[in-house]
Length: 343
Image (cartoon, rainbow, N blue to C red; front, side):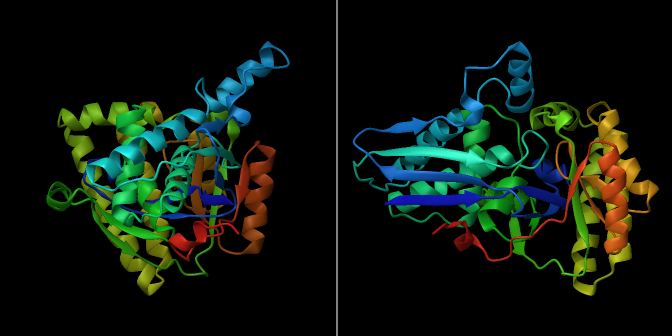
């Protein structure tokens, strides 16, 4: 029997990158792309390489292209680190595991290193598969923390909780990373919410902007730790914008959401100027040129925005296409953790 689990890319609607700094965000996952992990019982413990783990290339130019897309370390490390942290989690919580072995393999269609949480999707799917294999259940807030620990503590990847919370809950989530609550419980205040169907969202990205989240977070973390006033003020305002959007979603005040997205990006450019590349700015500027509000979905390489109607979307698609930018209408996942199962 093959256990198959999947997780999806994350788009931050508002508030990022304040999630790592006791801020607030709203994010969702969408199933236009996915990461899938298969796990099945075998005599020995084994991990099957995928495309990004290959070491054989047609020529040096292909090597350069592959490294630019996937980095040097591939995806097998994500599976190994997931298993290690999962076993340690179970040991810490006195959960006894059976001694059967397994083989894990993965595949992903999530555009890589573009701020869409592709790595954490692989880890989330891995943990979900391990949960089923060992017949245990981890609460969603703890699942998000466990996935984060795989990246931060095991692999040294700078990250925040937002991506993992959205992928653990598998529905749109309002997240308040209140410091007092985080220090007491180890996780934030999470509220599942609904994004109305008539809020027309798009996600756009270009694959030549691949850049790990550690580049943004390492610089922002340093300024935050040093108490740079502009950074502290920006984090507070990102949290406020999240509250504004949360209220606007309830009343369908899309004008307020439009303004909040624009301000979110403006703040990002003010306090993280060195990490917002010219091509990232260009994507937002192109959207703005057609009257569409837009902001970065994560650390860079992808944006999220609002379009008015199908005609407007087609205008954006044409303009983006001429500038080597892909655009999709995100199919927002709304059915919770169970939708990670593949039959």
